[in-house]
Length: 185
Image 1 (tube, helix red, strand yellow):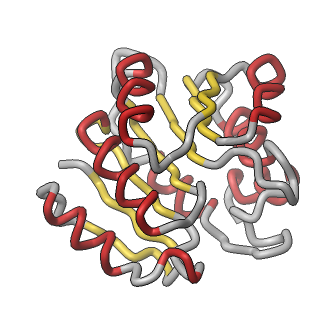
Image 2 (cartoon, one colour):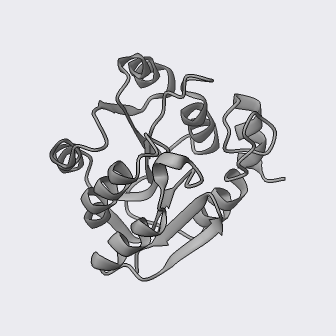
């Protein structure tokens, strides 16, 4: 068990292998983060969907403990997640992930990111819109991860692969039937 998985379980997020849905994404994330090239700035992670009602803010607390010096950006539609700004020293944007214009404005402020985790609405249209809006701001060698593709509202999940191909993305990796990851060359 990796350190990130241990933290996921401790903080109560479903990204580990010890809580409610036990998605077991954390071990893959820890390995992928180790493959991101060093930059002349702090590692920048953006997560969509940070206020899961089962355990609000759990994944952000996990990320902060795992990467104390990272620049972490959280996106959610729920205003309650603003408590994470001071608690976890992150930036929070309240917006609908299906709103490409809002995501574009956010990214003008955020700039380039190294790692994206889409754990938002799980609605296929939103996942595709987010990928289209965020992909240009993903740094070379960075990863774009889309979680929970087993959800009924994410179907047919192959549409995300087609949308990525239209963006010129050809290196999708299914790390599980629930997790699709793209790396930017």
